[in-house]
Image (tube, rainbow, N blue to C red):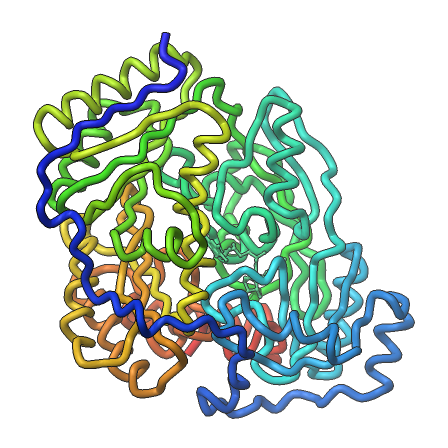
Length: 509
Ligand SMILES: Cc1cc2nc3c(=O)[nH]c(=O)nc-3n(C[C@H](O)[C@H](O)[C@H](O)COP(=O)(O)OP(=O)(O)OC[C@H]3O[C@@H](n4cnc5c(N)ncnc54)[C@H](O)[C@@H]3O)c2cc1C
């Protein structure tokens, strides 16, 4: 029996080292704070109250002084997003521990017209999790209790501020795992995941959160607690309101508790990392993987050469393969290792024989799998070392999945960029596409947007596959949503939050 198998067939690949649009000499490693969002994007402040000492005193009386942060240095990290694209200037961070505290905070803010920015792990990539102006930040970081894990039904119930990785570790003791996994798992909160309807690396197999969230507890803008915390798999009693909060990015209410359907942890996990010549070969490999690996396929990701460089060059990670134009990660989850390895090996041998795949390595050793997954999961971090990242997350028809990268390279041929590249959740038709530059430039922004959204819309894609709309995309939402749906979204917002105190300037145009 093979514990580790290396399949390696090197071809005489003349063009394997070709790199598009790489200007290594231009790289710079900036740790500067972004310009204030209100200045960079010329935003007008809404008619919200400016926080007074009396307001702050109310919060201190409610939470105690250690859970109300007003020191400017401590407030800073709550004001800047993970990829340093946006920055607000909140002077008050609130850290409730219970639903009741969240309810009291919101009722007070609603009565006093104080704007609130809900924040989980602050790993969001569309500027939704940080204030635009001086909104009070309501952080769920202390709402981190796991209430129950049912080994038989697989249902976990917890507070919304639980870190995804902690949930996964707790589930492991029960032979279960979280139904989602993403590069930010060590920081993101389950409430943030629910509020963004996060997709991640295994959506292909385990579906999205509209399927695996069984119930929620939510606090409305006026402080009313809505109990939607069902733990039932089946429940057709009228409208399923939980779906409104999944993906609503903190604009309709604050998620305080989550009931999650969790699958069994697989007994057998195998991972292949492959080198390929062209996107055409990637498509053929995807099709074949779906057909031949079928029920054990758990993840199918793609990385282009220029993207892998952000890990190997910027983060000094080592790739197990030499250089190819494209790479794929194919993972299987099953219950019988011998069976799964046999299937995976047969699939790879056939694909190599037919020359779909140029080179590859497979493993089921935990450390080696982690090493390979790092090459995928740390890409976002690697890009930040280029300077400023213009980051996009679109769904496109699978045949056109990669077409946006060469189109953008052509459009920006004369611009000062570090790299233009793509990677992403191939199995779900979701590409993450980046333009990195030494620093933010309005000129570059105007060349990229709205072009990138027009391109996506012309192909009937989605301008946000999984990251959400946040602050960065409300004015482009019409590229993916009809005017009828936007109208209903606005009506729902008014119904749930009549004074617009929850996460203003986000999601809705
Ligand atoms: C390295 C890296 C990899 C990533 N990979 C993926 C990926 O594969 N797939 C993917 O989908 N995303 C990915 N992301 C984006 C991000 O991690 C997800 O959007 C995640 O779900 C955000 O969770 P969070 O707790 O950090 O939320 P935050 O960033 O804090 O907030 C996100 C949004 O949700 C709102 N919000 C947060 N908590 C609540 C709450 N309790 N109630 C109401 N609203 C709330 C915020 O106001 C904001 O609008 C990645 C990010 C990074 C940095």
